Image (cartoon, rainbow, N blue to C red):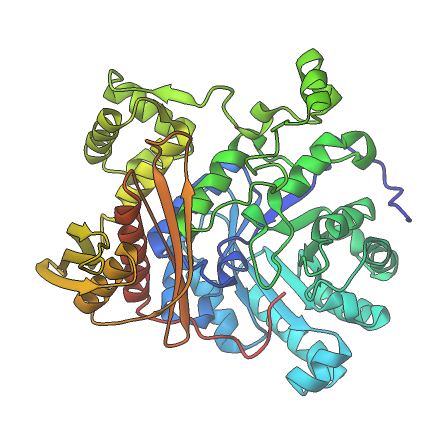
Length: 523
């Protein structure tokens, strides 16, 4: 593979462009409300990412508002909105970030012939004109402009040279060449960056960026190949979430550059000790557990079961571990607090876990913690994180679970549930029978809510070990074309199941404005 021959300097680093709030949220069930996005944005600040793509402001009033709020909340990173090459898109994106300390805009249009013919119904000249016009308009209002050649990996390279030359002249400061469909392999993707940097006038004046999807499982490899050929920005998401098979995983690509700095020569400025808290926070927010075998942040990433491996690690960790758990923020001892712990220690531990304590009702959370201590012999970090996230889920809910009584099946009766919920401040009760106690509880909740969405996924996970472990339930529900995830945690699994469904119903209720799917795909 051809590699860049440019000498590395002390100021030479790979910028991390995090698109969890935009591309990541586009995965089914990963919808986040405004407060959740702000909490995640603050964690991204602690990670020290360089750019946060907060959303697609023109897609809906709700998305515009979330971009605006994130732009105001995040003071360190550049915050930008995605935009098509349309006047209303550009203006909406600019307005959504105008209160940001470091505003930006990300303009894109497809450049592959297949997209031009079958999707845009535009000529190459039309696309060139639209791209140049949009960048010129944005440049009148701000300095940071990223331009993306959507579907770059299937585009004609010489045509992209023409487009990139024009948008750089118009004021673009970052050029993104995305593998929109996950079609590329590392050798050709790296060669494309080398080709473009050699032939585009002013190539050395802009940052070249890689945005890779994981359809062939090559998103991280392709991103690293781009860096080896001069790219100095990688666009990625926490836990690799995103459209279809996902995006380049932030934690994987960052740790690959750090661990193999001998080969890469450059790395990011990410505070890697915030990776694990960020991964767990996202998992709690979207209600999707991190797979155990997920590189870097999965539960098995630093686990050793084979006897030979255990023997080697005990003698010298580097025999089978190429990273230290502490480097990504995994605490060396997960046993943290107990019933004799005070409020100060509890608050300090929340901060260590990446929780924004300003957004948490500490009094209520501490009371919940004490109640949990009475139920459990040992309280772990994951218990506390689940507890606080569960408390946060209930603070502004339209639906709130008040009480639930269930009876299991017997030879004379079906499983039965009686549920009391508070709906917009008014308590309502309903009863139902079911095939099991969870099914009965769900049917009673549906009666109170007045809707019955399709339950597409239901999963149970023990957060920590032991029979007294907190149980975490995640579910995915769909109604009227909208899919949302819900999550709940409790020491009683039926209660956790009910909390997960109520959380999902609140997400459905909270989506007053369903984001409009753009008429074009996005990078």
